[in-house]
Picture (cartoon, rainbow, N blue to C red):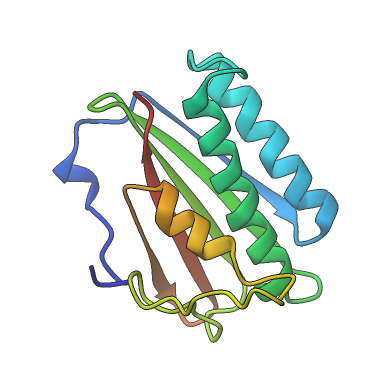
Length: 152
């Protein structure tokens, strides 16, 4: 799948709900992204202790951590947006950061993580746990890494 592919809104039914927040590009901001997304998903009917909730929160955590580590520009925030689509149901997770120049490899082209490396597995988890994922750049100043996960 092309990394620039992002399903258009009109290809799906209108989302049940969405949640968007800007957070500081710090470890505290990444933790807060996960906590707020967890609360929202719980409020939408997926309890904290269900497998779909745990998977979605792992994906939020990985994308937010990547925004902090690889997408940080001092003084610039990152944005978390989660959208619940009733068909499926499906959750779309989008994290936008300030480093359009640092794009991850395309889906299907991720290099395997070294067994001796302490990092480099985040997007491999995203690829394994999501139904699909990619990267979009809407302007020269930001990039959005997104994924979708089935909640059923």
